Length: 296
Image 1 (cartoon, one colour):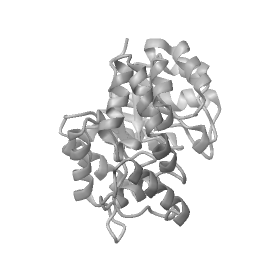
Image 2: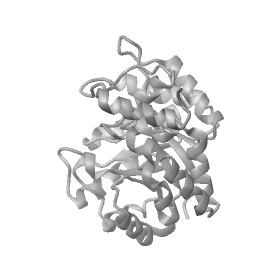
Image 3: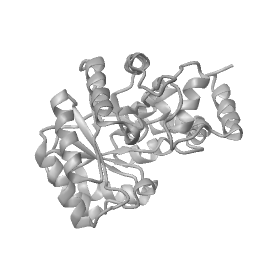
Image 4: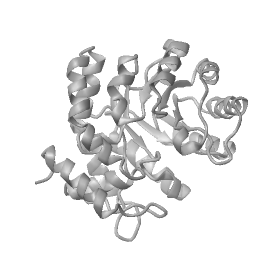
């Protein structure tokens, strides 16, 4: 059995920007402290939600370096270093390890994609190049390809590949994944609306967007699951479902950045091509935040 990187609710943290579009490190530091102080179990930096795809290499590495220093070993810091260029993913992953990241999050190749044999070769090459744990990221809705169960089973045998962030939205797939890989591969929900379903099958937690606005509650939902108290966990899953849905009404992280700004945490906007939220969806989000007492 491999060591579990974390259990509970990790946050896929946004990257706050200043008005000139530069990274607002002061606000990022405040957010990391707030999350840790309110029960969040891991910080996932420079993922999709963190807009890593519009960062320069220097920004990407500086963000990881900053998060590692700020977290100061209070919780694990997991760095997004995936790419559709294997050589680049190896370079970025090695640099993240040198900086002090506790683990890596690697999305499947996108756009150019690959075959399942290519996926095994791609992830194995990265895993061979580092000595820290790796979470694979399965999100076919964004990448256009999925990690097949047989592929996951092969990759799970690598000592450094310890988990999958599962965001296919297919609970049948997740059940088969857990059944096939057992203790060789931890599973984290990549969708906030599926925390309880996935953890009821044996998932170890969630990599969450909801945690931005409800860190204590998201942690508690996952904690109830870990304690096999699925009745209480389900109540929270259902209670916050409207807010979760509105946080994904448009391409992530557009709505969550809007939510943070609405509750008074100025995180700026998104870098293009992401675009400000529509007035209609913003009002629905505002209503959800008000319903749950997050704004007046």
